[in-house]
Image (tube, rainbow, N blue to C red; front, side, top):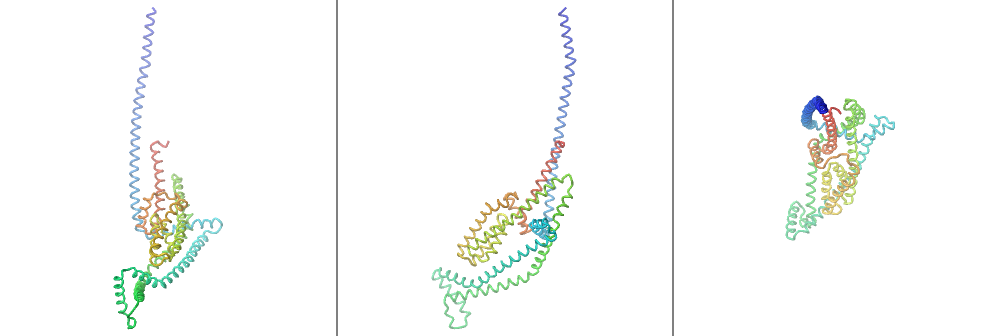
Length: 429
């Protein structure tokens, strides 16, 4: 009896297990199949999104390439007008802090826009008058003493020659000079007289060449008039930028759509900060380098030291190669007049140039310019050369800050594009 009951219980248990586990197994299998289907669908969607992202990247690259090519061609076509606009914008950007300060303390902005450029022009005029008077005095001094100095140099050169070569050269000079002498008692001339007479002939030749140069300068009056007109246009355009700069910025911000308002505001603020810091720091850097070079040139006793120092400071605006370009006029002046002779002064200028470059790289640039423009040296040299091809000297000066602005814009666009890609991938989560 007990055995029969046990058998029935076992049968019931098997039946219950069969009825329970079989549907459960079927359900688990269905869930697994559904999971696999969902996983395959998810992989297909992810693959589609990745392909879409690659396609978007290709489209973006193609659009940037086409836009860059069109922009480069447009810049080349309007390079003269663009140069005037860039110079005006540069002047306005440098002067804007002073105009803003006068505006903030209660002076009408229109009056501030008039006062600041007039003060700058007046200072520049007085500085130019002082520099021109100094240079003119040095030119008079050179014209007075150059002939005698050249005679002395030629005499020293002749004394250093072998006797036979010296005698032949003196005889040749004496024949050429005495051929033009009409007084019989002047045929027997000393070496000094022969050299001095020869130098007078050279001086006459130089005067003739100078007259030709002055004639060429006279014929270039049209170019000077054009430069004067461009200067007037630059002055008025700069005043326009100074007067309406804030309104232009506000109008640009108001025109930005709401969905990109925040990144656009960040971008404009970054460009304003980076460009402003760069231009003002470079201006101070130029003054410092010009003063250091001026002191060095004064120690060497070079004529036109003020002019040469100014040229060296301005040339330093061109990254890396600028200091060496600025040293070329000083090296040329050494052959005209110097305190320590040609050789020593030549070496002195090279030492000054290298020393200024070291001071600029180690102290001035890190303290003033800092990281306002984060460009590696190779990129800097390339963009400077490209800028020179498009806009000449102005292009060389503005290539670095413009490239830094372009880099900032591209970085912000990449950041926004990555955010859009993540939205596509994760559905905005």
